[in-house]
Length: 265
Ligand code: 5GP
Image (cartoon, rainbow, N blue to C red; front, side):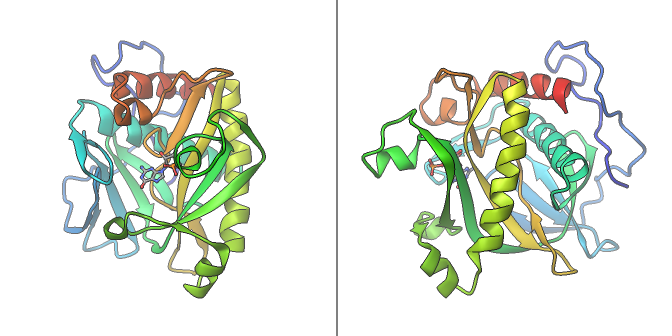
């Protein structure tokens, strides 16, 4: 069943009294996680014995930075990232025709997704200079990058996710062009959506993989954990940099994004 997102903000979650636009529909809960496939830094990936082509992404109340060197466990963070991801995947898949791994959201902190063979390349799209492009070049923070740029990083924590060149990606046996094309499309749609919320989509990281039918699909999560979001025209952050730079409460900021998104998707 596609398109199921449970009610946002369970009792006391944010104080919001608004109703969700997409209501919870009957979907089996995910207590019966059978096999732990992968324990990520902030998510676990499970599989059930009778659903070989499906995985369950469970979001933890956990945040890390510096490749796991800093860590915290903020209450409500897992659910908030999960629900933001569900809304963004639904928007991209159902309204914008982007193929993603998302099937539905059977509980507040879990996504059900099609199993992918993940491509070991992180695809970054940048609309405004921030983060590593500022640290590693002469480019000034806040400069608009128009057209947006797409970068590739190796998905390998042990090697600290180094920057790749197009040629290196090709030598790894991966064609970067379909990744770039899909990433630019995602950027166009997400930029438009966040712009309605008076938010600048500064940059974000995507991961892709192939489903059982060899279709290229957008995977992983889509949340302020892997994107930079600034209040339009300012550098006021609503993303993981608040934690990276120890500048504020990420859960409050993420919940603000979730509340805004509910009005526009
Ligand atoms: P930068 O290269 O500037 O550090 O990151 C660019 C964008 O990609 C930022 O929005 C950042 O949050 C995201 N990003 C890059 N690498 C990772 C990663 O390993 N994990 C997560 N969650 N996000 C990442």
